[in-house]
Length: 182
Image (cartoon, rainbow, N blue to C red; front, side, top):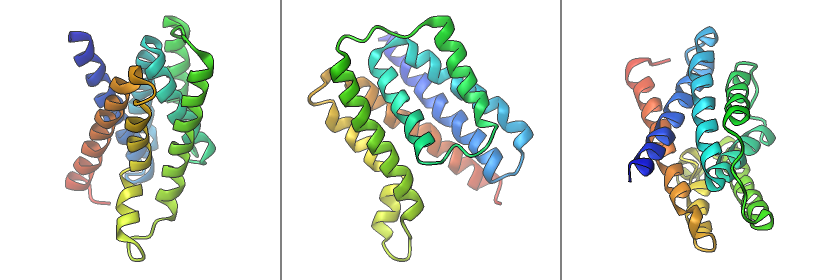
């Protein structure tokens, strides 16, 4: 139970620090400060990835999805990727029990991540408020993760972790809106 709580705390702070770093770059224009939260988020990603094939597939899909959708557009994000790589080199990659299943899950999650990122760019609040809210909260990925835990029940806790990750991400966004209007 303590392990489970620790994983959920790691997911929460990975989301929180990722959004802080992203907002320091894009909203607050303080890129020199963004390296720290992005590196922390990357280290947290790496710790989670090293501890379970399910966390590994989820977070790998997120990383690949944001890269392929063109969201990694600033060099400061390299701090996060370097931290992920360093942690995985230190702790190792978890054993994968079935590469075919793992690959199928990776592809499904990656497509959901790309769809969320592209949908977020495309959705217009004036044209379709529902689509705008759906994609701005990255619901494709979160709903897909829960549904994919039906054929892969071992993935369920990672799917819950994604929702907790997003809670941290949204709290950071709300804090920025509350205290740092741009």
